[in-house]
Length: 216
Image (cartoon, rainbow, N blue to C red; front, side, top):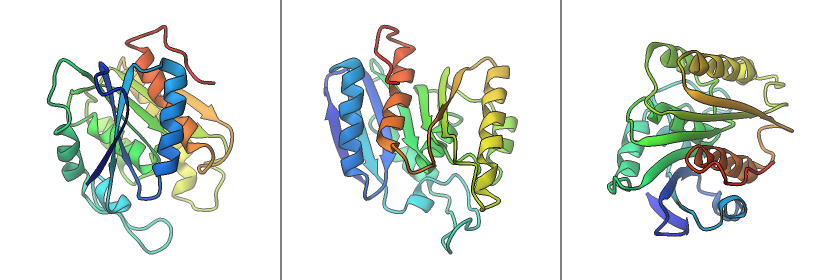
């Protein structure tokens, strides 16, 4: 798994993010946006996954677009990411966009190591995921959720459920006493992924340092 780092290597807050093979330029813009909000008070570590649908999926599921289904590689990916969380004096936050956002949510049910989860436009339409949330206890205190206001307006019946599923997830987490926000962004799933992810991380960081600037 290819690893890249941005920001201040000595920062107290360490942001961890799985990314796809073509996300490098977006990640650079994202890191710049995070720096606008908090200066050098962050270290961002990205993990380039080899197979997006396999490496970030918690269990196998059929294809919802095209022919490629979903694997069950999330456990292996989380195991690799946790190797970068050995210094327990640091504060760790896990986040991501799309399926990586879903992975971050799922990971927070597996370990209490993350102070918060930054799930930008997470793929909560993933079959069985909100049922999984209902049957398990999340092990983080802060969760940021977002969605584009046009994401649920699609002809794909599975993906069209994303709006209902994220509202359901938000309500469920609030009912369980989790500090959780749901932000609606303008546009479809493919707009401003870098800025949306930066906003997600800054919100989570702000739970520890409230004076940090949150990007609007």
